[in-house]
Length: 417
Image 1: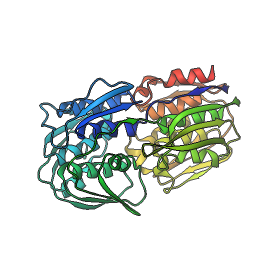
Image 2 (image 1 turned 135 degrees about the vertical axis):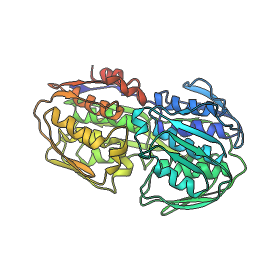
Image 3 (image 1 turned 45 degrees about the vertical axis):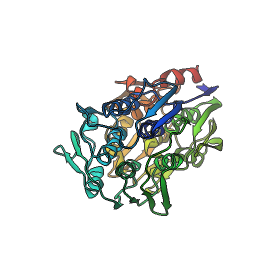
């Protein structure tokens, strides 16, 4: 298999969620271009509409006319977040800070994901948060007159941090979030670009009250998590070169790209500043893969790419060890158990650890059936292995990639055809 050509990957999912939310909260018109149109972003748009925001049909070039910090209203129905944990957790902060009452629901996968991590800081601020048995959805959030908070998060979580910052923004109170490690900082960058008063600290971030956000036009850069799958495909190819255009290179998201270099792959990029985010083109060529060890310090910057790393490790020389990644157990699926089971099903030696996994690479042909559990990251990761010459891998739900990368299969076929 050879790779060739160039791809503009879909707009970044994390930034797309935040761009819609912050545009809805800033009074006036914000023009958004390159927004990701996927199931998860549709969930955020639908929830915002249910709260009274004027969100048009999602498109590559669209204008959102925001209602302002006090322009939202109580929904008349349940807030259906589909499969999107980002929608649920960020909008819970908005609802709490706005003094609204709403009940969040989602699909079976999302309903099992833990919501106590956002319930705790929101309760500390004065909101009432009622969770289903087991700590998941349905989740009722009752806002009110919130108070400021100095919250220490038990894990590095951009969703927890964002929920607190958005609750404080909406309530007009100060807040500080402390983290054990740096998590994605898109919310901080985008809030600052819209006039919020933030201070960055070595252990986190704080926000001070502001009357209103300022509308802001924004081009959404390509999603590095989506780009990672095509970069891995190029790394595993027999020849050629692949260029990925206008990808977000935020340091809190570039962990997988750096790891590819550690594994021996020739990968090059040059970042430029676009509206507070680093963006650039990435060029990837095949190379001889060697095993790596990934620890807790590596995980936050590549949490979504770890299933892909495990698949890449199946073709690396030596044993790859991933630790400090217990967060994978509470994603769209238990990604540790699911990845290890699927690797074994196609003939790869892999072992499950409490907070990670081990994978022994080989050049044996890969064949077998893969269960995606409806998880888009698993489908794309094993889709990369399925594209290799000699592979005979079947997949039960290839269409679940629509959550984040609807054109994935078309792009994969185009660069290998």
